[in-house]
Image 1 (cartoon, rainbow, N blue to C red):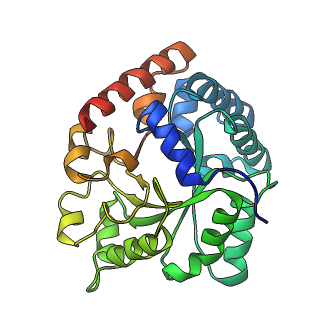
Image 2 (image 1 turned 120 degrees about the vertical axis):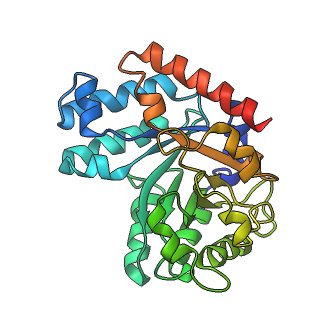
Amino acid sequence: MSVTRERFGARLHAALAAHGPLCVGLDPHPHLLRAWGMGDDPSGLERFSRTVVEAVAGRVSAVKPQSAFFERHGARGVAVLERVLEDLAGSGTVSILDAKRGDIGSTMEAYAQAYLAEGSPLAADALTVSPYLGYGSLRPAVELARASGRGVFVLALTSNPEGVATQHAGTPSVAARVVAGATRDNAGATPMGDVGVVVGATVGSAVEDLGLDLAGSGAPILAPGVGSQGAQPADLARLFAGCTSRLVVPVSRGVLSAGPAAAQLSRRVAELGDELRHALG
């Protein structure tokens, strides 16, 4: 069902222009809950999540909850995730649910309805999806996202070293085929499309080596890897030359280690945001 919500690409562009590329990764690891003096249980999860959202919503372009850390607490954990997504709605900060769903046919359609359909309690502004059953298998998610004013981020060239064996394979490479699919789906969309790609900030020369035309894709780019995984803000301008205005840079531990005081979280967000803006010019 179509809605009157502005397209995801346009909404993300506005959030990036207002707040810069920093995206806070909401990853409530058990050790982080303990470090904050909270229990590794649904109650601690809710206190943790509410503190983070209240400290950063409206101050960063995006928040990226990692679904697995909520799912591990069962139904009560998923209920916390629902509240996180509800609290982010309308805040000026977009929600990117990191669930990496991917399947075929009616199952993919059901995933799309769960995370992208208007009125679903788990509907986010965007969802990460996996194309490794074929890019075409994502069609139900792409179409529902477009109809509901939402977006998807497709795994293309991820920051984990194990991804090389699959993503670099073939001529053209699997990663290049994914980017080509996103490019087709974003054709004619301005200022950016609704189908993003995930390209790790730690991939070195792979973007050039594999001939990925990120600048011409029209895709928003989710670029994990800055901070604990080794990439630095200065690496981003080089790796993503020509498309830095479409860059979303998730940082989790680099922000969340400043907690649990909300004021310290807000201060860390401001510092990292300034560092990223300076690095990207």
